[in-house]
Image (cartoon, rainbow, N blue to C red; front, side, top):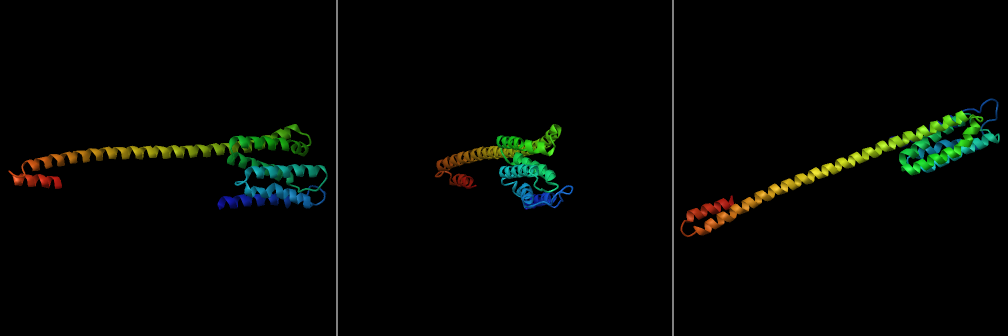
Length: 218
């Protein structure tokens, strides 16, 4: 519940960052399209633990739509260009943590390819700026992959520990079984000997026969 609440709080905070800020300069106020794009960039992050790939696809599409809207002169939120990369970063991190390595890698490559053009527009053709932002996003993906590897190692270590514990228990049960077998075999051998002795002296030495029967009872 705390994780769900944290994701929801993060999505709402980024929504406030993208929507509540005024448009830069004396430009027009943000319209319905700009608000919708900002919401699509931020609110899906609340579901990033359940549908990370779909969340990444929606966030990247909304970021692309924001870039297209800005190119066409549509008013967008003043901080949409700030919230967008942050949302993509969180979505990439979630994909790298939650998905298989191959799936996460292809999702990251596709996201980088789609965002190259919006980043180019946003940086006014500055190649270095595009490279820096893509490196920033790649770092988020790498952090997620590292966390995923740590979790996988923890799971493997726990499984190995469980197997080792199971082997130790099985070995102890086998040892106890062997000792119990030896004790029972020895006891039955003594019973057989005492019974034979009691049968031999039953008529001639009844007291000795009774003693042998008492030993069998013990």
